[in-house]
Length: 338
Image (cartoon, rainbow, N blue to C red; front, side, top):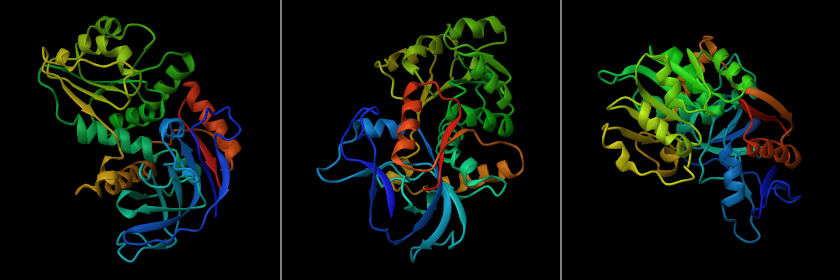
């Protein structure tokens, strides 16, 4: 089968940063589905792994997490899907990725593809939807209000992939005031179209902007990017007993002793925890993806697809990685078919 992989950690400008390769077809065992990949999207984790993850000499690492496709075969222990089912999912960081014609994935982290979406539109959703959903509802528990706080969620980086779906989930599933941040007119407009009640500029001090609204201190802050740059503002503006969720790797150490004065809680999300550690609640990803699928088909939330680059090959994936690394993307970049 055709696939795209890398054998050494190289800058994306290198000719060999990503390579078209041929691999044997995998076989479904246990609770695995064998999925024929129809579309994939590209995330910051793809570029991070390409740059940093070591590869054994003479071997290739296949990247790719987000995918939409059709179940071709199932393992003997599969209970939730059958051949021919259309699915979408985000895979696991410790297994070969989705940048291949055929892919193995545990059924417990797979959802039914929204019937109202194309494969390309569906492929834009899983990783960011899982990350946003788990952060907001499983980690931060925004459904449980904070006493004496403004029932508001500030989403820092509201125009990115995770921020884009988080804003929609918050508007649909909570009664919280939703505040998104963006630093450019086009990203701020995007955030408004997603349903944010207020839009702030994260290139300027956020605490001052929140204070200027004269409404109160938000109960929740969901920082999707550049947390270390915003930490002082977060500490100043978040309500006592508030909750901070983050998904990035802060470039500067954060002294958690600063959180004691307000009795703040910190919730660090990585959506690969359940599949990597085979947790007892791993099936929660199946459940939440199906919930997202239902919301999409009911017209309650929409795909965050921003651009379809072309077929899945090394040249197009290099273009996508370069755009992700530029830090200026809005929504999700998708590649379609081989």
